[in-house]
Image 1 (cartoon, rainbow, N blue to C red):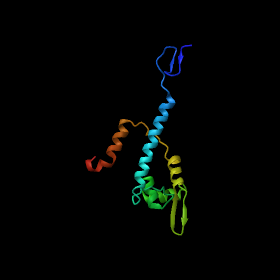
Image 2 (tube, rainbow, N blue to C red):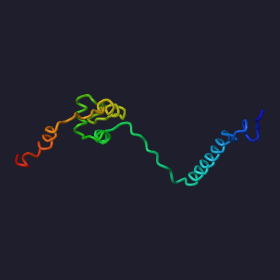
Image 3 (cartoon, rainbow, N blue to C red):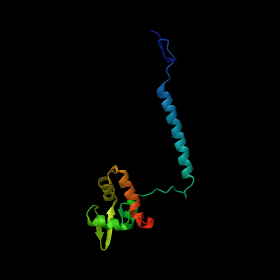
Image 4 (cartoon, helix red, strand yellow):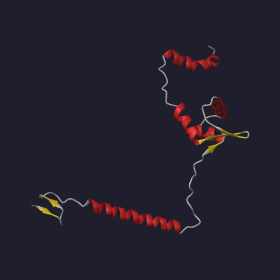
Length: 134
């Protein structure tokens, strides 16, 4: 049998690299780098990396900003029961899940229908007719 374990050759072919050794070396280097980073961070006790906490409840202004819509539209959607809300006293609160659910359910992409040339002209000229004297 033409098999040499030392050189990792099989039947006269090129040597096969030991993949486990390569992976082990890579893991060791990542561990070393991680230890260096941890030691650098622990050497600076006053400096912490801020962790952004995800907000769970939103008021009307924050919900409008989250959805990129107006506050008026938030009130309309609430009245139509399209967004779940909680009320505490006079204040309204919306959960992150209810806002995301609204985005997923209500705003599925709907392509705009094909317009004829006349419809395009009407859309463009409609609000400008008075200005143009038409």
